[in-house]
Amino acid sequence: MITESGEFSKTNFCRKKYYVSQMNRRQLSFLPKFVFLYIKAFGILLKERPDFIVTTGALIAYPFCVIGKLMGVKIVYVESFARVKRPSLTGRLLYDFSDLFIVQWEDMLKLYPKSVLGGGIF
Image 1: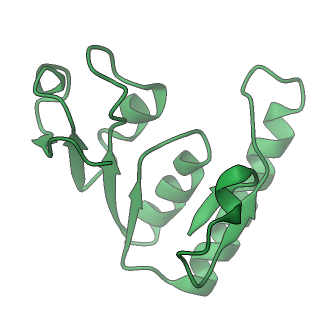
Image 2 (image 1 turned 30 degrees about the vertical axis):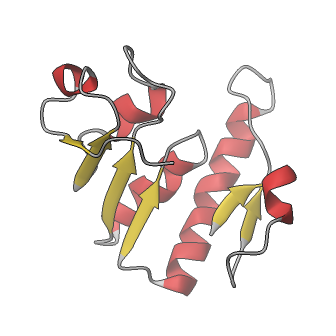
């Protein structure tokens, strides 16, 4: 599991966890942090060699998916349950990268025609 440091990191349902710092694309320090995230993503993916990446998005997902795709890793993206009428930024960026793109609302099939309706995945 790769996640941002925070409250979620206190749960113990995964054996292996990697933490990255939270990012806000409006911060001045965003660009250097984002470049560093690509380096960290490459290192983690090289070490773990996953067969696939499953993500619900957020900014940290993008570098992992891009580098993973370049390494031949399958990408499964699940658009957020909160996205009922409008796509997320990460969803728009990863739509063409994904091997499987899942939406949770039928209305989202119009915005992502190659997606699959997964219903409510919590």
